[in-house]
Image 1 (cartoon, helix red, strand yellow):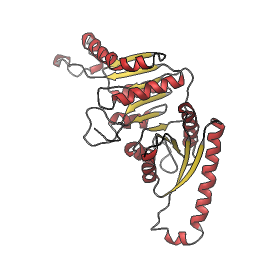
Image 2 (image 1 turned 90 degrees about the vertical axis):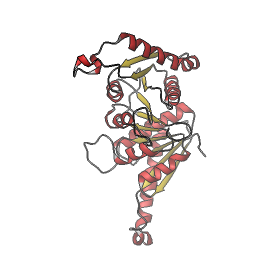
Image 3 (image 1 turned 30 degrees about the vertical axis):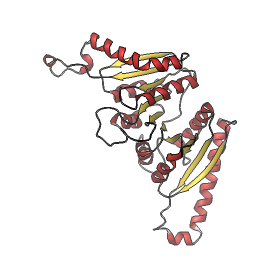
Length: 293
């Protein structure tokens, strides 16, 4: 059963500490409790002799101290929220994916311990973002707010309504502007040769695409009349456009899948590229029933 709880998983790294602060602020905006978890990476089979001795208890005490410190950081960021802690034991990605089944939102740092310093996205964060049962927010660096807008990539896939609901809600809660991005490839005249789609001047098609987006968004604008909305129509690939606008955004929101992806995948190429290259937090929204479509 899903609970109205924000869960943040962290390990004491700098991306993890940023995730704690962001998650605490998000829980406060939502009026929801925050659950702070860390995962004790423990293989029961290969470590069974250590379990029989003191090694397991030593590692467990370390994990308990770590999660208590992380909860303290969350409490400093948002003193009024309810906070609970937990230590999960096992493979980090697998345990967090299981835990996501009962969460309303899971928040992760972009990278954890280990791996290569130059990587923008760690393997655990990527696996959880790809397979989680609830929306996932991946936090890059120190999140900025202020007057920066919330940005959402909107297509006409089944996940679009969920993205719009999350985007309007996030903008409303933050008192921010909302920028809605629609990327499409216009009919390409063969005589243009190898010139990029972005250079094709198609004012009529652009106007028609913008009208479709305005119609799609109309119910949400009526529900959130206080949210200023800007629409951006682009001929470039959605991932490239969204990565570009992420430099000036406080949050980018996309669906877990859009058009043109392999059936059965849980995270489309746009979401995956954003997780690797965005310069602000990225939120991946899943269909309400938790199923891919």
